[in-house]
Length: 621
Image (cartoon, rainbow, N blue to C red; front, side):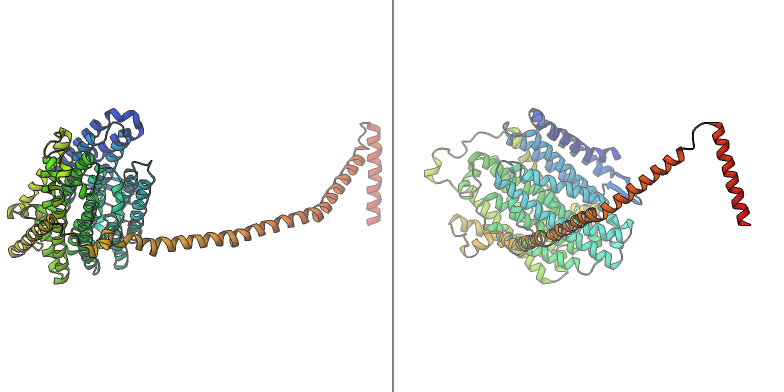
């Protein structure tokens, strides 16, 4: 059933390319075409998840490029296609007729296709190609409103930062190729010789941490909020940012084959989950809160890859995709209605938009890790695996889980708080118009998926999930551990809500530090950007003042030598040539004189020649 695999990646790619090339001419039909293409891709994903197709084509000598759907990628393609369909359906109502809809939906479909290739790639060659396309398209989507310089700057910063991390994937491909062409297959990385394997794994780790906005790359995700809300909903849930975590889970056998990758990833994920959770809690902008929480939640996927919990990592990947896309779409509803993303300006927003409020509540409670929602199960499964590596990373992970409940409660308290009387007269609670079906249906579907994934807490469903992913036999959380984490989430959620309702949740001591994304952008500017810029300026000055002057001096010397050679050497050479030519002409003239055409003269000449020859013979004897 390779047709389903080709349809899965080909349909969104082809329709997206046509819409993008058509430009504004495609605006009237862009939204229905995009939704239809995404829906067909979702159907193809369902067929592919059952039939498990694979395809391979020769790329370079001895190096094939291939796509395949196994248990791991089956979960990923269904997640990506489902979230993309919901987001595009929502965007059909969100993006007005005055927007360049052909360009927007074309870019979104191409971006989705690149992610689908990423999760089904079987080799580094194909993965790297899709990885690059996804990065380039993310720049175009974040900077969609290119008329505003600030948005273009944000897109550029996000692109350059992720590109810096992407260099790791080139290192991985180079190390794999040096270790043997067969190692370009993702399944062959673990079999590389020690040195090449470590280099390849290091490259994969750097690329994944950069793409998933883990420390120290996290700050770029803040700038990604410059794009339209549907872009944030797709990019921050099931696609680009999630791609790094998925790559780590996919290459878990290679990570386990090294002695250092597992602990590094566990600590990197734990630190990101905790610190970016604190960043999320201190945000006053809802989209910034959700962006920071994305870093925090994906930290658990990174921890899962480092600890070998494939089942927990993929459940976190899937449940987070549903919940986070739901939260961003709800934020988009309120942004369109209120014209603000500030939490203070969104007071009572959930009361005035009951459907969005209920959906946001489901997503926020899931992110908080409240039982029996799926992220509670996923985090506990990850933490159970982490506990085998020591109590310290487990404690950090558990604290990060509690912080997740705190920022979820802060967001919920803001949107559900009553509107002050002086602000409520113009729009009483529940009086706003009902959402259109293209807006309501995605919210309801994503909320249902977020709740429905909670079935995996049941033992039978959990066993099926682990068997699907080939992850049977991993460490499982005991009942007491799940009870502790669930109770902790509930207590923190309730306590934070109570403090927010009374205005006591403002942690002024850490707000400037955490609210500014830990100063990561300033640190990157100070430690990387400025030194590199200074080095570039110094090299440019050296080029201008030393190399360029040296080249010009050499050129002047060559010119002067040529002039001297021309003035002295060429004159003599010209005279010699002219003398030779003159002598040749004189000899030719003398040679022509005997050629009269008269026979008796030729006889005389012959007699003279014979006499001379005879004389020479006589004299030589």
